[in-house]
Image (cartoon, rainbow, N blue to C red):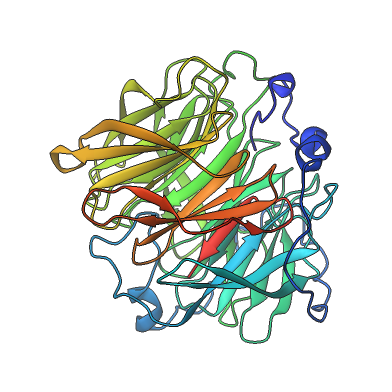
Length: 421
């Protein structure tokens, strides 16, 4: 997770501040639907390294794989209502009752609530399988888990243990055969096989970030994000507690991770989230603790990431915790969510991804933008406003990269993740 309140700088648990964050929650406009089936019991707490290899997905699924970076070419402009899923904390005061289900209008950006997938505890981060049939959520609790949901009928397919505490991020490997997740509380990364049905098998690996030593004010490792490089050759895990980005090679037959390199940020930076440029040779790192961003060079052959100098977020001297960077599909602009300053920073991407030029900041339309996401075609930007219990939507100017609010924010309880499809 993250140090989301100044008084929580030394402890791992964001649960201690959730009541405060939810105190300003507004009523949700999502309409409840029938309860989904209860998740399956937890898996074994020890890694099952000899688990059988799941069935490979179809060629169509592989073609639509999410590699952790936007496609170099934007998707065709969609028509009609598009799916939108919303993550929340179910155990927080004013929180939701599961995964929010909604649609958005691809032209206007307007959101319409369609119900809730219940039976999923604290689904704070969401990802979809490349074939679009299965949704995955972390269960951000002391006994962490990951849950699979079949989208055709919203059936919960089961939950597997992540082997650690407070998982806060997950992603599907481009092959569609493996689910990767991070345990913030215990500083570890986990791998689960994806079965043909979309359900998850027993965990095949668990890697704890035991070194280097924690950064200033941190008592241990805090794995915050795990993504696959655009070339598909490496898996990168960002650890806020250790000021380190670890690069792994995934054994796609066994589902195990082997470290191949690690990149250190400056001490106390608190790296939170990494976003690749579509060209695949550069990535941008949001540093939560020291309120900076960094352009990193990436070598696809070795998997080595080389951080550059820290850059300004444009938020001034006040308290601010950068949350997430996204890059437009054409690679021309990048946007950063600022918690505290409650804004979005706009950068121009220059030199084929090698430079970020600070342009401006715009108000995000609410309080504490925890996560941001672009629609598949890049025409809309969604910002999850945790303390406002809402999601704001911006239209993205394709030429200048400017952002313009698309109406009033959509009410959603303790909104911490928006996943537009």
